[in-house]
Image (tube, rainbow, N blue to C red; front, side, top):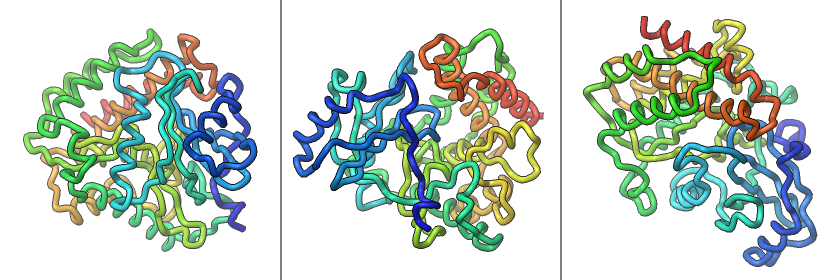
Length: 351
């Protein structure tokens, strides 16, 4: 039963193969207990970093490395992501970090190794064998939000966390930074986003909260316990974690939150099962989060528009790599359509 519901890797995509002999030789210097040559597969759910499963005879590991092609400055910093999860060990459910390699000669880029957490990842649809009723689905939804709240309540002065970000002024820096990144990654088939960037710059919140934020918190970045699918046993993808505004973190999460009454195009882009009966709507998520944290947004529309715009920039950066032949992953071919769709959603929220 568990194998039917736990997340499974697939054959490695063409053009993204590893030199497994080189990886194995390097890895056994740091983990000499490993036996045999690993069976290598790849997790295909993400659209950014490349993530591989290395199934050894006596251990189950994950290798994570950046994608090929042009990347935004400071993006895909494997060393930083590795250190963040080291700092969170014992404070928050993260995978066990095992080794970091900064030598690009092994895989073509730096990478890190962590121990695999065997569990369920709620992607666009829950596994068919996992039958949750509406009440259970609602509780799962609340547990996911509670786990984000728990993150936002961690002590940002803890060792390893206190140097992650600049803190004060985060909202302005992010708004300006994502605007610059969009201009740099724009292709001729997408909207300019100038009205959106101007509106954001003119509507910066007067109040700023500061906490540790994940910056890519979604259901398909959490791992559920196969023995108790309502329990979160791991949170993945810490690439963009920093010290910043938790309401912006929530806005980022809700940009991915496709609810049951959203239009067909948004449903086609859904990456997590937030459409199921029992899942909260975006409005209900905001209300629940603010009631439990005491945070009071000056104008929630700012965080909503920011989250949608930021998602558009991320999608455009990925499409830019595809457009210029830096990746041949066919999943990225139509990302420009998503970018234009998100532009319209931003304008609708502004109106």
